[in-house]
Length: 389
Image (tube, rainbow, N blue to C red):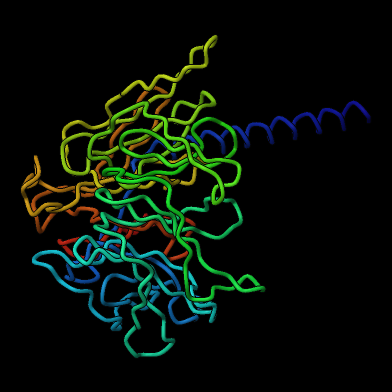
């Protein structure tokens, strides 16, 4: 009887292992299969930034782009925020960073622009009134703005890329309960710093460094009280915002992924170190040299396999067609690392009116809660959602 039971148990274990192996293989096959997206037009507005957060507290995420927000879950109902100032073909609105700035429990957003030279936040009124605009700082020309947790306290700091002016971090003022007080404290790091900005741990010390077009700023132990050291180890040109920091080849050292915002090219820079001297070397590898104006990008897991994809595209008319390739067809893509190089998958491509670009600030979010992340993109060519099917 014991032999019979043991035989049954062995069969059950083999079936279980076989099932696990098939499931694992199915997951691997799924991760290699090109993703399909459903393209939905939300609006013909020409703002170049879009954020995703719950505006009205109904536990459904909304889309926020320029002078309007679009109510979830179907985004058919449009509400007024208040228009940004327009300069020719540009709206002076180059980011949509959500944060409860004044601690009233409602999410506001932070933006700014090239022409007005101001970093501002717009206050969520909690009703149908226009959103009040508050000045954070007169910064100089803002290419776009990003938010990263510089000191690891769980609260995002605001960092505009101001190529012609000083690099500064803006830290939210908090009350004794840890709520926003409506203001920001600025910390100057260096002077003129060029086009491009990224954040991540370059030297493996556990602290997030800042990456510029001409080098990287090493974060000190106390980032708001000590000096950041500049290492001029590369020249990335008119670099994207953000510059992605990621261990692409999984060798234990973070690398850089850089698009050319106003020229042709998308590359990754492999970090190598001499085993004896520990001197760093950055080796450039092309990802896509055939498209221009890779101004913005994201590093996120689109297919749920636990590994990130690079999501990027051509910004439509970054300089109104005057950049190299400025009038080429536009597209949105994702790139999958295959262990040796990146493979390109086209999400959308074509001339204006058919293809779609990325603007300067786009979002990745599971809008329909199906456990697959969607892509939300604004630009001079309209506001669209690409549902991940």
